Amino acid sequence: MEFPVFILEKSPLVLRDIDLIEKINKKCWACVTFSIITTKDKEIKQLFEPRAPPVSSRFEALKEFSDRGILTGVAFMPILPFIYDDDDNLEAVVKATAEHGGKFVLAGGLTLASTQKDWYFKVLAERFPELIPKYQSLYGDNYGPECNYAGEIGKKVNLLCQKYGIKDRMPRYIPEGRLAVNKQISERLQNRVYRMELDCASQYRIWAYRKAAWTLEEMTESVAEIYAQKGRKGLESLKDVGKSLANEIEQQLQDITVKDQNILG
Image: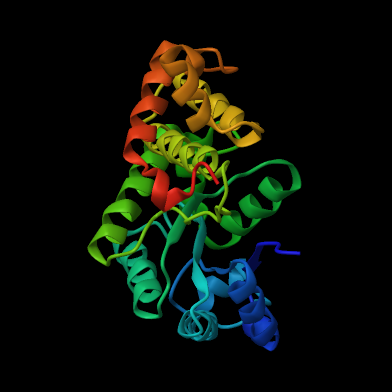
């Protein structure tokens, strides 16, 4: 059975299975992503990753997977506000990823809730007491940082990824067949959602795109066939797809060639 595999790791010990992962990748698809928050193996890192292997060993492992032709990249998360969110660290992580063969960097902010928040603020009180007022202002009573901050960090990572020739989203696995176009358009809509989140767009608009993407993801009919048979009206009849999103999907369909995506099987 062909089954894609995604692995998120913080340890180079995953290299013990590199031969097996390579076989999976040749038969279907595999991706190995390493969690990294900084390029520096220094004292501050030990506060937040006390038992984690050296960052340098993770990048070396990333390169070995890349050299085998296996999709790999970095989960740059959580990016710690006022500690690891400086421009130098952002660029260092993206640059090192590209230099070691990584194809993407996924940026993610720090979330704080319940016992996690208690522990984190205890560390701040012990080592960075001057940052506590900044965190209180940035988070308030929310689970994540305020939107403008998160958007600014995400946009910086996007520009750095462009600079070093990699992506800030992970290419998804799309199996061939008549439903491939559904998956591809769903991916594009979800990527649009991410960009809207960085722009702090209205939640109504964000959820409209997200629900339309879910509709395409779960369909058992080809959206290309529906469009070929019923045109725009067929798209508008889909769950959570109105006139505006029907137009968006129509444009995406026109951008995807039937031959390359094997839309009709």
